[in-house]
Image (cartoon, rainbow, N blue to C red; front, side, top):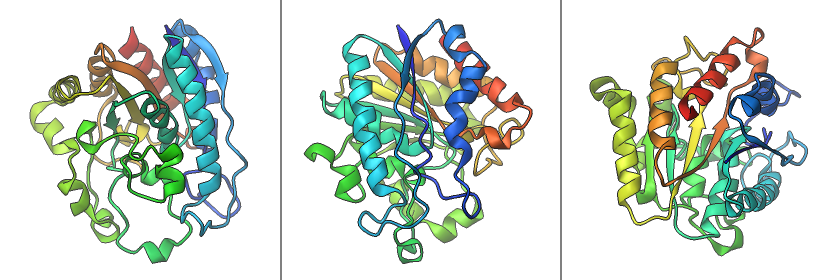
Amino acid sequence: MIAVLDAPSNLGLRPPREGHEPGVRRLARALRGHDIVGRLQAEDAGRVDPPPYVFGPDHGTGYLNGPGIADHSERLATRVGEMLDGGRFPIVLGGDCGILLGPMLALRRRGVFGLAHLDGHDDYSPRLDPAAVAGRLTAGGTALGLVTGHGPAALTDIGGLRPYVAEEHVAHIGVQREPEDFELFDLAAFEASRVRRYPIEYVREHGAGSAAEGARAHLEAVPIDGFWIHLDADILDKSVMPAVDSPNPDGLSFEELTSVLGTLATSPRALGLQIAIYDPELDPDGMAGAALTDTIVAAFS
């Protein structure tokens, strides 16, 4: 049975402007407002609240809100683990992408698992100039790197379980590059990783369905006990999903995303899903949130 859990953390993003918290903390409430729980005929699993947002840097971890993210990840992992142990299929409503640490830690506590990572960015490549953002690195932009073991022990080695997922047990769909990415990030690190990659160029040539089928085949072939699905709303094209902090100029349509999610979610190895980055503050008429909810419901129908 599907169970919907709120994890409304915005700790992994920088403030959009001085003194203002990122609006992704309202994602869960917005999707619930579109009746995602009822339409999925899901169980309401409640919420795991994050600690308060801290605007200043954290030089201990190097990450903005690092201690808070570690705390929230442990509590979210415990709750997701309880749901998995109870035979539930969790759908976790974020939040920024940093909430990925919680579910992957929950799975790592139970064995060896994989990850289907749907994202318009790789969330793996390290900064070329880390000193320029000392204490202000963001878990939302490096979540895949963190769960595969790259980063401070406070975030990547909770319980001595680094990495929470091995790179070769990850399939990534949808990455696209913009000029500033080459200026800010060591993109070669992602290309040299063992992550199975289906970038937007692959999707355009072979189709979103082919990318999803390839990712599913990979995750069903590797020696794992199941896999988690991570959905960042910025995998969608900005023409249909403008309500994200980094709108995607070359992303998927809602129809393509429905196909990808449906292919992955129907795998017998799929164990749960999380949804991240949609920002209701950037969607005043609610249309993008309604379409995102429609897509999730259609993929699971």
